Length: 453
Image (cartoon, rainbow, N blue to C red; front, side):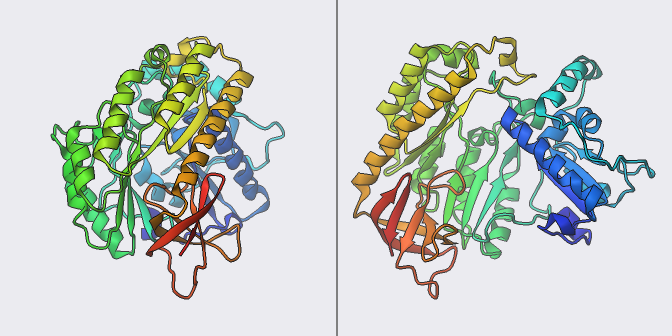
């Protein structure tokens, strides 16, 4: 949005770009490697294309600024998570750092491909110097006046209500990448919601690293409940979805607001990470299996037809077969609607890195597969129970996989991370993305549902 506002033309075709900007992730090793592979792929455009400058932004840039420059000299500018507003200067400056003069930039592609391991090794060598320098954490936080370009379909949009995290989960690097928790004012979020609604957005997805901590940093009691009630009054918005809740900050006020606001969908995204008390303690996660079960039972009692989504980690240091069996039993007992499972990634800079990464990679992966197979059986059972049910579906558009079908989502399905609904008998002359229609569930295909308009 800032780049476009400064008069630059955006393109989705890398071959047509004079400047390429790669926004990166650094949360787990697979994400780091994907980011590095993308940088290397796009760096080739400087050799055999029209690209004059390669800019790398985001979490990998925040975490490995100097190491990236050393391993991939084709990079001209590196901007961390707190330097979003510097993007225009980075685009417009001469080759090199923003504001710097012309510099010689290697234009040959690497014969030896850097990996996340190479970058991490350089990073470990620099950690002590970084700590001695007392590097400041990012503080950037956008507001309603910040220009933005929607990268989602026109009928839904993500709205970041806060940035950063004050927790110290042993496996997580986010506080060092994003800084301390800082909430946006309610008025700023509501103003952005109104602007999005005016552009045709029907669904708001409220996100942060911990959405139920919203307002605590500002010492505003009940801030999240107030925000939901204010957003519920925005004309044009049909659904409001909360993502990334934290088990110990889900308050009675928030649950009450979800229960009474008709636009807030009964959808609880609550990453729990594990259920065995010993593993939770080593993870530095609050609560226990017993407290989690009480919380989830209470949510089902207060929010009729609530959808429960969670994520788990397999193979955390010290996780035994007994620990994993307890996690499986927990999943069987609760019967979540959606479950994601990640294998543990041993990340430098986290508290867990001091522990021995003692669960073999093949064991981590086998446990991941077993837990997902268990969840698939739970989903299949739930799907059988829903046959013939009449549901409200938000239309997303024509299916990319099936020529004659359209796709949509139920209130219990978030875009990109959950399953979808395939619609039969959909009339493309009548339906439009963003429409809310009534349909009848007639079948299922794996995690997805099939419905008749």
